[in-house]
Image 1: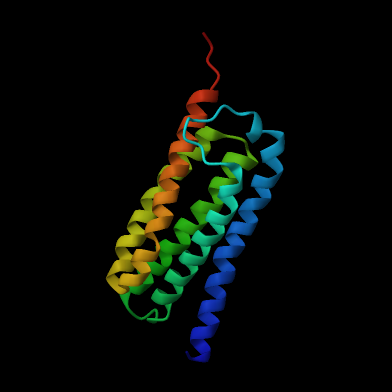
Image 2 (image 1 turned 90 degrees about the vertical axis):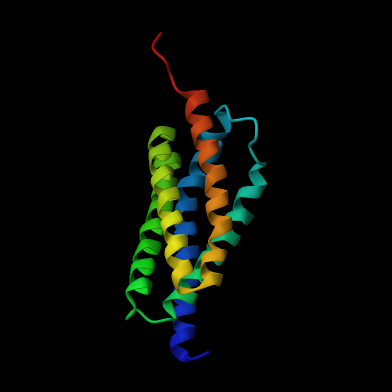
Length: 163
């Protein structure tokens, strides 16, 4: 691996895990003060599952990003995939700020829908550049599908009605 590849790998890991870390700042503060008191859907994984799953997903995302980035940004497919990756990573971080930071399941639901679509587009684009990179994002969209289900359920079970 060249020095440029090592740089790209390190930046990819730091960016993805850093986004996770920043998102966790919103999450950690809201779990005991708000999230624990919410009614949740029947299939809600135990709280101790979320951290390790997200840590792993951010690592898989960073490897996928690296595999695409190392192809060089001169290719249109690489550039578009690269840009969409940063869009979905930003949406990922924004979800934590909306759902946990603002304590808004509705805003989170809107955001996670956009996030899911951006991940799907990202997978398709990454598959055009690297089969492995595309495959590495599949667990991510599966977990975000679970998160979207939880988000929708939490919104539905906890929304206030004016009847």
